[in-house]
Image (cartoon, rainbow, N blue to C red; front, side):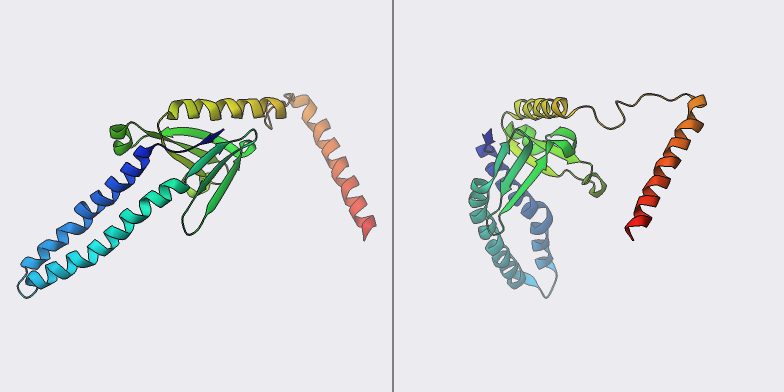
Length: 193
């Protein structure tokens, strides 16, 4: 199944750029009140920022059109990018967690996102891939979860789930068998040299 994000994702990007400018950059205009800087500083500051704002607002539609999500039988694929095209593939066998994420702008616009976590990426503190700007995010979450369950059902139980508990009386015998296997392995490796 191939998915495109909602048009509201583009609106979210535009609002995000506007809010970053208004909250973090525009207040520096007030430095123009410092004696010696004056209106010259204000006009130069605003002109410089208008350039990056125009560029940002011009690139948002192209970036939005580049975003595509695919839910395959064995993996989730995310395609995105304008200059650097990125294709991220996350096999279901590596997925450890999927979560629905909805920030303030997402809730206001009626969209949501899905964060797909893997064991390898968890050390970095973020998801492997994000499916952002989805109008029907709950259905997509359910689809990924169902695909994950179907995949796990065909590959068998996870490691450790199918193990038979060992009593304390059997531990020395089990350790003896492990030692025999290690000795046999070492012997076969020694004969290779």
